[in-house]
Amino acid sequence: MSSTKIRKAGGAEPDEFEAQVAQELHNLESSSAELRAPLRDLYITAAREVDCGKGRRAIVLYVPHKLLRSFNRIQQRLVRELEKKFSGKHVLLIAQRTILGKSYTRSTKTRGPRPRSRTLTAVHEAILDDIVFPTEITGKRTRCSVDGGRVMKVCLDSKDQANVEGKIDTFASVYAKLTAKQVVFTFQ
Image 1: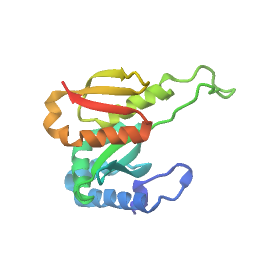
Image 2: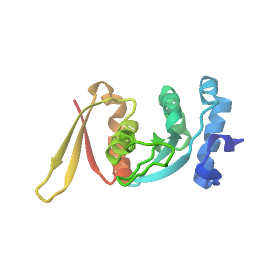
Image 3: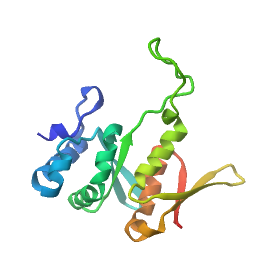
């Protein structure tokens, strides 16, 4: 029954870790009264364990872009329960998005340029928003060093500082793994 909680593209079989995460989602749906109704129609497309350095690991759950709003409504409760199940590993929810290259050409049926939401920059900014979800981003700065390196400084809303401060290193390392961009989080 846990196979209903993960649907991979092309009907591919989930690996062992993804099956374990899907089973935990199914267990939460069946055991938790407050999460039963919201989780009934929700599923994930993939799960990945990311090494955050210093022996810490984080779990990244990819959800369909259409279901992201539904997941965001219950994200705080769902993440809290999943972090309990996975012995304190941080859990992040990210929408499954598509990046289309500059040379993208449409089929003969549809015309027009590449959608702005499918560009590399738009997808990376959306991933950053997903990673820090309960908190809002209040500002961004890109700092270019003399040697050509770039570091993005992201200012988060200070009202959520107590809830998010312990996860900042995880946010930065997961974003770096997914996008190969360095980021530093501060509160403003």
